[in-house]
Image 1 (cartoon, one colour):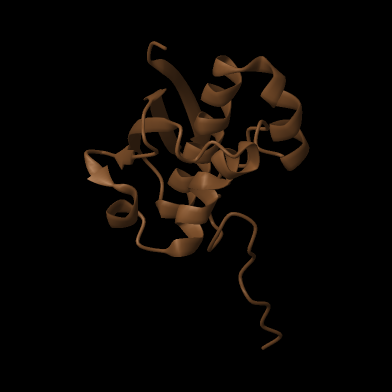
Image 2 (cartoon, helix red, strand yellow):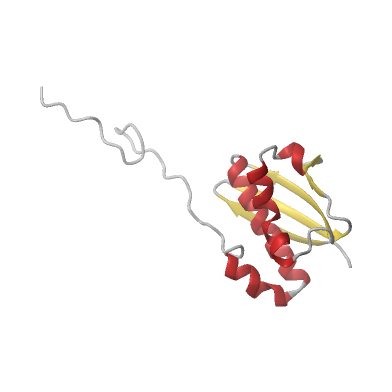
Amino acid sequence: MEVINAIGRRKSAVARVYVSEGTGKITINKRELAQYFPSTILQYVVKQPLATLNVEEKYDIKVNVYGGGFTGQSQALRLAIARALVKINAEDKKALRAEGFMTRDSREVERKKPGRPKARRKFQFSKR
């Protein structure tokens, strides 16, 4: 099997994934998964597509991720891994879609408007 690549995005985070056959090692920006994402919840989010298909120990994954925060990066990584697994085996798409891993979450931060404290927040009303 050659190296399969895919891309995933969430908020302003972008994850490029390179999947090859191996022993289940996940390397993010030249660091281990547990070192890059110390939170077990974020590690779980990253491994969700692999756990759904029971292939955690089958593929080695190299990742370049940039932009956004750790939550957006982990969710972008989840989308990229799911897309790469579908490139490897198209029959897996139905199972991944049922779990919601194939859908790009397109919500972005709304810009701050001039004359307001935040994007939608108005200044506090003062009667006197």
